[in-house]
Image (cartoon, rainbow, N blue to C red):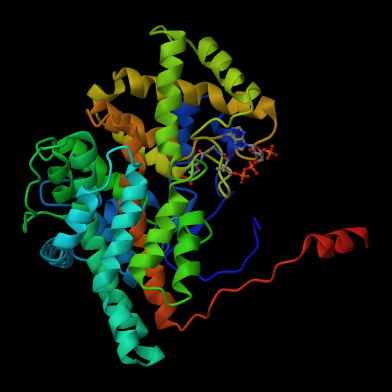
Length: 416
Ligand code: FCX
């Protein structure tokens, strides 16, 4: 179905071919920044660097925050700093979990993958769905969107407390979970609840990460799942829980966990002295064993992912990060992998996607539990998914119900 135009998704658009390959290959790093930097995705027309210039940051910070991105996605307008702070206050005020959800999450075994726990928690939040309650009372179609918006804001508000509780339970059992600070932004609070509130650089990284992972057109598996399930008039909690289980697949969001696992086993196998040649050999070993190279390739993009570039640029701005062994390894892998993948000749896009870079910075800052990384992606992807749910209900989009063929019918078509 690649390239099949079958959905409305207004908040972001991908352009696979906007950038120029030939300009950047001879000097991978330098020219990557010069020519490919702002291409590939636009949020209501704004590229990532445009958003970095235009969207308000948190007080004392520089990076885009989730609230300003959510505002842009939902309304198509750049919010003022005051509007962004107002939204931060609203989210903080609505951010506490109902006690039964806390109990539910606390009852889950620590061996259950954090993404499974996140999906369970989000689905359970639907007990308080105002859309579902209103639907049961009987409302007009034209009113659906207001209740969808209500649920959507509550869902976004509650994700940090839910995700942080899962982290605490699985990796730091018994540790205290701080209360939500009404004066902090959504991700500031999330970082604090994860136990990293004192680390300004990591908090800023998380702000950038969560803003730019928020939306990526409508056809990706998580966004499309939310849209499909929402089209049955399932409420935003159920629709987004379904999306999270699509995000949890290794070809989609779980790739950020897989990248770390793969890069660390490379380190273990080849030792500390990692040269371009040893990386090349390790890449071939992975490919010859029939596995994919995690963090490379994309269903739509045909150039390096601009989110990868933005995260790498964050590293460039901090000398301490550039000397980090794991960040160095990701960088060196990038210098070798595209040519190996080209020679291998299968993937239509031999360049890195966002997952190639997103985990190594977290790892460097001490958030080393990489099975948790997709949960952070899950906190983020809600921004785009709920935006579309609100607009789908406002525009009265119908049930999504494509036609399928039986094998026999396909054989008949093929034989004609
Ligand atoms: N390593 C090895 N082989 C790869 C590859 C990679 N990184 N990427 C694609 N290929 C292979 C495919 O497996 C396919 O092989 P096949 O013909 O034997 O089935 C062939 O190349 C053509 O695939 P292509 O059309 O380029 O890619 P698809 O649209 O089918 O799949 C993904 C796109 C992203 C799933 C694919 O590139 C992949 O598996 N990448 C590695 C996993 C990953 O990083 N996923 C994260 C993507 C994204 F950023 C996100 O959602 O978070």
